[in-house]
Image (tube, rainbow, N blue to C red; front, side):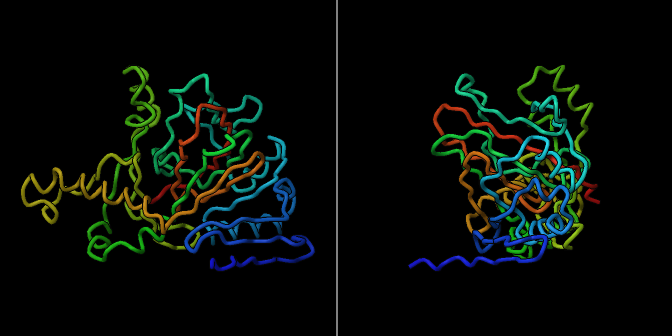
Length: 299
């Protein structure tokens, strides 16, 4: 018989009866009896949500019938918003990126890869607030992985090997790959490859995070006498190590899976998680709107 999940109830004059249900042992909690529009002007509610985000790494909310202005307003409480150079934004709400999938464009559905958002930026996002506008009746879930736990569970000799490694993250090799060469090179000129530590320290919690994903193309400081005796140690040795690290997000014990309904919201810490949009639904509309919150340099 499955054990009943525990539900914590947080009560105060400001918070009312906010319920917090942990969804897995590793990551994720659903918050109930809360309206995110209220957190725009409610300092106590804002600080409670921020504290829970740091603890659970991704928070989920249902029945959030809020306006786009409220969506943007809630996200802005955590920091300045950023547009995406490839995905389209709402013209009336800069920073609100529209991720619309349509049955009329069946080839425009690529999204199923574990990643943290925009690590090709010198300052990757702090986090993202994603709202479901329309979704398939079945399918189209999103999954998140705890990359703090992914680091903690690595073998000790791997932790030692990667302690000081750094990696390049590229928009050119991902979003730019399908573009004509002129546009691809222009995109790279606008967003040169960023370099980040392979093991990042969380600026708020001090936790160590495994910070590589498919945006990472290569290590920048692997080719040293300590790591490379002969050329064969570097190729394919460095690439195999990078792919091994990237694959850690795929371990189910580090994950939570969320089934979308209209007006449901996910709010995740982009520094300590990766996510995966499951592309298992038949041709139909899947409309999501995401507010990305600007972050800080990783070193």
